[in-house]
Image 1: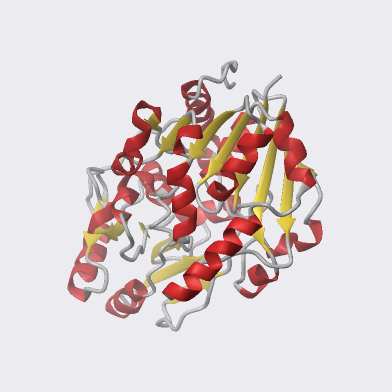
Image 2: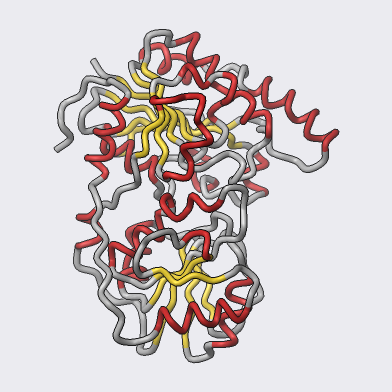
Amino acid sequence: MTEILILSTHDYRSHRRVNVHFIAEAAAKVADRVSFFSMGFSVLSLVKNDPRKSLLHRANKWEREGAVDCFLWKTPLHPINLKGSVTSRMVAHFYRDYARWNCPELDERARSASVIMMESGLSPIFIKRLRALAPNARFIYIASDLLSTIRVHPYVQTELDAELDIFDLIQVPARAMIPAFAKAGDRVAFIPHAIDCAMFEREMRNPYPAGQHIVSVGSMLFDPSFFQLAAPAFPDVTFHVIGAKKQYEFARNVRQYPETPFDETLPYLKYANAGVAPYRHGASSHYLADSSMKLGQYGYLGVPAICPHFAVGDYPGRFGYEPGDRGSIVSAVAHALAPGQAPIALPSRDWNDVTREILISAQVDVPSVQ
């Protein structure tokens, strides 16, 4: 019997759809049970406008969503990364204690799990707890991002480094991430992200009026200065910023939208004249050339992509700029919108294939995902 437990700071039921959601959905096709446990949620999350806040009334109970069991662990408080050396040391103790807090719902699923997937973020602080509960389970680390890039507290990195031997597989979606896990040797596997091809190919209505439109989706490493510099330079282009978490002071030709369900966002990507991934510089952010889901989606759809030079990589159809540099931003936008470009046709695998490769690489005996 295959039971998979997934730990993440995302929730399977939220509007935002990232790699771990698709992995859970595909895993449910081959496992007897998939349990998706979301942590790091408290009153602090409501203040920070956490995308899971709409699930507040559904917290602290297992709930079925499609073929996946979901649990949002709401606690009075949860640890967050604070600046300052003294404060940081104090918070480190809170991370340690938080990982030990009573949660019988998590412990029960861990004891019965044959596979435990832990996504980068907060989950590494639970490694020792879960290994004690599930000594025979296969452990998989889903390295969606390097912890330094997403500014996770150093204590989490320390725990991950100390317990790296526990993992049977570390899955990285970018080649540039491999050196960060050198100690794991051949247990590190470069398995890039996939595309939900069926969802992208379905019929959709064009949401844009006449004119040229550039779209941005998501909030990771979001750099508002891109739009503050680009929008005034292209007054006849409408820029659409979806799910940036907060409202910014932008020019009139920038439209801002709240976080939107993924399937409602897709038409904005599909019919855009260009897409932008407005990343700011972050620690080791160069790996985004491989791992950026939005850039992969633009490429699959044949939409020219505008992104910082560090995220261009060796992919066609991407136009790089230097964050904060008006001249390079204007040049990148102009080239992306220029007519007569060669068509972009990036191949992509299905999430079923990717999930199967992850499980097989961790030596989990599963049938083919159909």
